[in-house]
Amino acid sequence: MMKNGTHIPTINSDQAIPVSPQEKQELVAIKEQFTSCLHSIMENNKQTHARFDLEKVWPKTNNLDELYDQLSDMKQCLDSFRPISPDTIKDMQTLWDMQYTYESNRIEGNSLTLDETMHVIEKGLTIGGKPLNDYLEAVNHQEAIQFVRDLSEQNTEFNERALLSIHQLILQGIRERDAGVYRKQPVFILQSDGTRHEFPQAFILNKLMEDYFIFYDENKDTMHPVAMAAHLHQKLVNIHPFIDGNGRSSRLVMNLHLLKHGYPISIIDSEITKRQEYYRILGDYQSVQQGTQQGVEDGNSEPFQLFVAQKVKNSLFEYLSFLSADQNDDATDKGYLFFKTIQPYLD
Image (cartoon, rainbow, N blue to C red; front, side, top):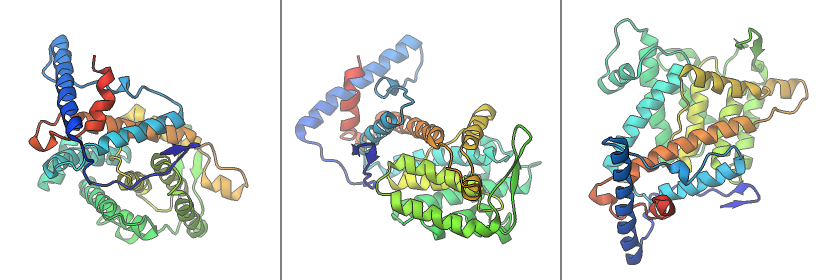
C-alpha cells in the first residue's frame, strides 16, 4: 500500500491466495492465451524458447515513486504464485544463489569463473591454479546466503548480532581474527581518479553503527522495503565497519531485508562496466565521515535507490517469467493476479 510516497509493507506469507471457481476458469483461459502468445513469439523468431516482455506491463521509468509502485504491484503478482512447490523453489534458489555468489565475489576481485564457482559449491572441488582464498570465499558466501535465507524465513529481527554473524561467515577461515568484529584500524581506498578516500575512524564506529540500527528501527515499518534495502546497503558501505568484506556484507544485508518482505534476492552485476557504474553511484553519495566530521548533510541517496530498485525489478521479471512458464500440476491454480494483470497486453 502506498500513501503519500510511504509504503506500509507486509511480511511475506506462504499462504495460498484463495481463487474462486470463476477465477479458476478465467485463469485457464488466460493461461491458454499466454501460451498462444509465447508460441507466436517462438514462431516469429524461429526459436524454441520465448519470454513475454514484461516491460509492456511495467515500463521503464526513472521516477522512484512510480518505480516503487511497480515493484509493489509485481510483488503482489509474485505472491499469487505462492506457496511455490519445494522442488520449484529449490531449482530457482540453487541457480539464483550460485549466480549471486559468483557476481558478489567477482566484484571484490575473486578470480573464479561461474563454472568454477559451481564446481566448488556443488562438488567441493578446489580449482588448480586458483588461490585458496578464492575457493573459501565461494564456500563462505554460499553459507552466508543460506544463513540470510534462514533469518528471513524465521522472521528474525535484523540487528547487530545478525550483521556480525553474516560477516563472520564471510571471513571464516580467511581472516579469523577479523571475522565478525568491527575494525580497530583506519582504512582507505584509492578511487579511479587516483584520489584517496578515507573511511570513518575506528573510534567512532560504535556510535555510527548505533545510529545505523536506530535509523533501521525508526524507518523499517514505514519506508518501502526496497528503499530501506538500498539505504542499509549504502550506509553500511559508507561506514565501512570491517577490515574486509564490507561490500559482500552490505549486499547480503540488502538482500536479507528484501527476502524478509517477500522480494527475491537481487544481484548486482560484476561485468566491468556495470561494476564501475555500481561504484560510481555509490561514490556519488557523500561519505558518513564527511557528514559526521565536517558538519555537512549526507549526499543524495536517490541515484543509488534508483539503481537498487531497478535491480529488484530485474529480479522480479526473472522470477515471474520462470513461474509463469511452470507446467507442473501444483502450479495449475497459481498466478491468477499475475495473469489477470498481463492479460490486456497478450495481443
